[in-house]
Image 1: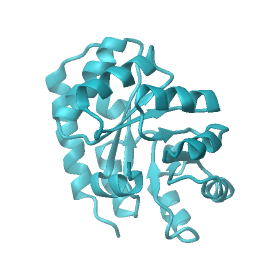
Image 2: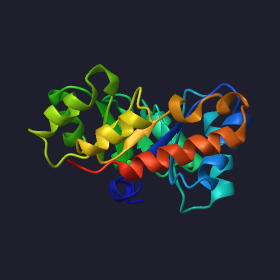
Image 3: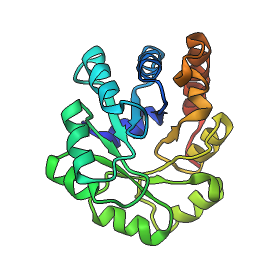
Length: 210
């Protein structure tokens, strides 16, 4: 898939992780039905590979379904075998090299300018600014001065208001976990998840680059 184009088009990446595989799968499907076009399933969740496999079967080959917290080469291979079409890392990791070998796009985690340079040198499609909460939108704006052409995706503590501000400051997209998922990964109310998804989609559409 063209991850960069998808990030810039949809501007929102949902992050699903949780202790209950059935609830995680249900959350993925509700998000997809609610118009969230990019979804990451973190490998730290229970039976995450099984969740990716089942979600892929339900959503079809063209849906933007990826694997997160992909750290090792083995993680990258397992995620690809399960149907992930993009990978996400929390930091610079050995999985980047394997993703390149597999031909999979990667949203690679970085925080400092040095890490941003290294992520791009390692073939990252876009840079996951993580944890974004440490510096906030002002830090993103500062990073964009030396890296004006880098696609940044802030992740970590991004609520709906924060999403608007990051996007106004030039983020390609934002990644959102708990503020969007809430208790859905524990079997919570799917209608409440739909409402949060609608709110975040509105926030993503409202945020315009400065």
